[in-house]
Length: 238
Length: 313
Image 1 (cartoon, rainbow over the protein chains, first blue to last red):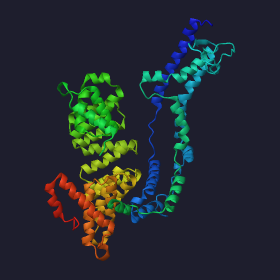
Image 2: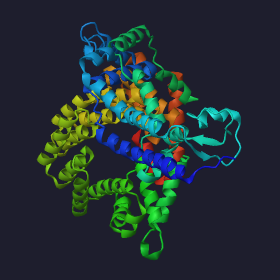
Image 3: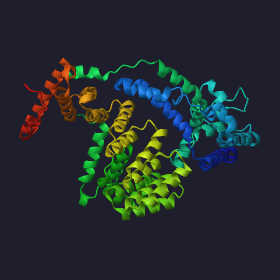
């Protein structure tokens, strides 16, 4: 048995927990402040809607008569006036957009800043002041595998797995504080996992309008139209 | 027709609120549930929401029980209901409270615009909506309201122009296409209207009402020289019958009218009905007569007098 000094509890464990909680609240408030209103550009909405409309046309063309279908096909694919044959604004290409519009980059930066900077600072703070403490003991037995998780920063092979080091306590707080924060701040606080997902999907989010237009136009030109409504007369007569 | 579970829940809650005990005051939890269901399902029950919601907003007990964000949501919802029922004084009070709490919100601005519209102050309303669009050019709500302002003034051509600009960007909004179609119809522009209904059908082919309206417009466009339009209309009415399991009386009437027109107005081979069409006409006439016989026998004579029923049935 290892005797844990109450001073360690008072001066290491509680301060870490308290600091993490404060930082969680602070981060929530800062993120709320910095969250700019994401107003989409009208041009990119228009491009997306055009593609959607053409997809609807392809999917449900059976409900249109030949004349109506050709009229719409012309609207999209006409060589001179077709919506898909216009010169597309190059800014709708995501790569170009990144170059020409620095606000997107700064947006990403501020988002990361609110997430990453506090983590680095608190990590360094804990590492500098509180490294090497054993702060708590888990009241139930654990397998050896947990050693890596619970005893980061304390490399003692003889120490029982159930003891928790200060650095590990910090990590447990970092990831486990969400529920407590939700209680304090109400729903919809920042969730680390959600932010990570957002960062992952960011690349796929942008629309590459010129290429998408071309692909959509090709498909529309290739498709065969047949008027299916006439068949319903037969069906209804039965 | 079977109802969805959410519809049943709404009906039950509404019933409990309407028929509550202690002097007609429904308990707060029930009202809260009713408002939530209406919000989630985008149901518009202005009278009930205005009556129960207003009491909820004014009661002190609710302020304790509800959390802040939900209370503001309820404020917005009740405000729209009050505008619907025309209780301007109460609505003005809520708009003031909301503007004080969220001075920069475009949602509150839309509400202010709607309040101006309700008072008949269209200039002010237009100004408010234009201001929102300046901030965010892709604000759908404000754009649509702007069209409604034009319509409210009776300036249909301007309403059409605004809506066309809107549809140029948001071209997959079926409801907007439907609205444009009815505006065109009020200007007697049948062809343009039927184009709009075509768009509606393309976007939501599963919705029978769009097929029905498109078929109606095709039928009214058909003349003795363009009877193929009436034939197309027959097709769309059949689609409606297929989608509604043959329960649409409107579609049956439409079918019989179209087939009657083809038979009586066509020349030579174009007036001949195909076998399917004859069978369809006979079937619809039979079903329509049976419906009338069952539900309202007094009107059956009038149905027969219209002369659209094929002879020999």
